[in-house]
Amino acid sequence: MDLQCFLCCRVALLLLLMPSGLFCMSVHILNEGPVYIMPDDPLRLEARIEQGPLEKISTVTWEREPESGVGPGKEILASCPGTGLNGSVCAGTRPNVHGNMKNEKTNLQISRYSSTDSGVYAVTVTDHKGVKTTAHCIVRTYEPVHHVTVSINVSHSSLVCGEAWGTDPHFSWLHERMAITQTVGTISKDGTTLIVTMKPFCGHFTCIVSNKLSFSSGSFTAAPCETEGRGMTAAVVCLVILLLIVIGVLAFVLWRRHRHGHRGERLHEHLDDTI
Ligand SMILES: *[C@@H]1O[C@H](CO)[C@@H](O)[C@H](O)[C@H]1NC(C)=O
Ligand SMILES: *[C@@H]1O[C@H](CO)[C@@H](O)[C@H](O)[C@H]1NC(C)=O
Image (tube, rainbow, N blue to C red; front, side, top):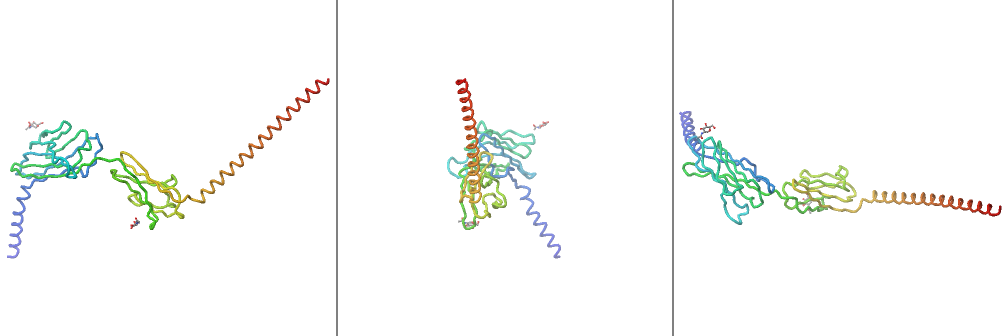
């Protein structure tokens, strides 16, 4: 009896669940958002539509609206008729917008992206009964690197590199124009922080931030590294003194030779005169 009831319940549950599985259409945008596009590059979005056997796609529309919600509202970019397997071309509303629809896949293309094309893109599928299903994808302009700053966290003896709004920034560090070694410190995983372990904390630190479009750098200068600096100056001074001595000796030798030569000549002339 119990078993029977259990089976009954399961069948009832299955019957309840089946229609929603059969009649529910879904749509997914395959690009992982947010999508970053450089100006003048093409933008391509692709969506897959899943439909039950009893459903028919009536129309597919691609729309865009600003991400911030200000400015003009929704703009229709392309609308496509529901089709068979052979595919169909969607009607774009602008000359640089193209779309098509084939085998439960639909895509939208903007041939030359400009920053005004950024926003939330939506693809809406309407079935034969007028039921709508929508998927969204955020599209943003790929921005160059902006305003790199380096600040010091005194309590943790670390340097923190900041960047304003560039897309996908990559951080790297230099100390006295050389790559960071373990004697200087360690760099955090995301690259933004340099934990300085060298003692004393000295010299010139540079943080370089780059992405596909540009790079920029910021720096932090601690007290000059004393020992190295003094050693270098002493070496340079010694070298200069040595050079001066050598030049002096050479000049003296040349001068003496020159004088002796003249004296000899004069002596000859004198002798010739008296003879
Ligand atoms: C679809 O394409 C195939 C081959 O390309 C063709 O034989 C068929 O007639 C087409 N069907 C429709 C509905 O256009
Ligand atoms: C210094 O770094 C530590 C650890 O990352 C952090 O908790 C602290 O807030 C930082 N201090 C300042 C002044 O930024």
